[in-house]
Image (cartoon, rainbow, N blue to C red; front, side, top):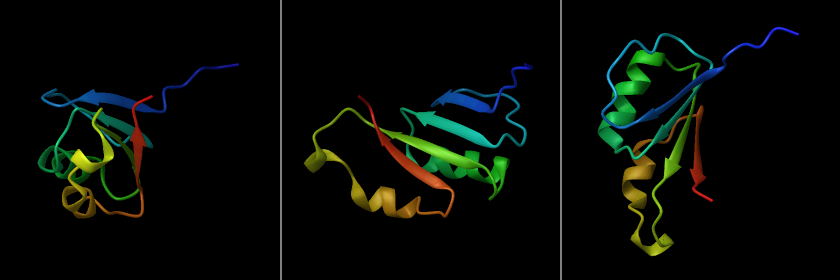
Amino acid sequence: MKFQKIGLHIVKGWRGEIGQPPLVVLYNCDAAYYHQVRREVGDDCVICFRLPERAPEEINYEALRAMAHRNTVFQRVN
């Protein structure tokens, strides 16, 4: 069986060629960086945005709404 990479795990501030992967995981990022990555990968890529390790009342839900997209999912760090 051939192993294929399906995407990238990106920490805010990384600069490099992203290409057009089917999946990207963003960690420690803000809305501006999310939008930068979304422009580069296009609308068909699924972006998993890992939420910060904060209490729910400390999360900026307005910023999350700004990232609403059919191919964006949010994940809490476990």
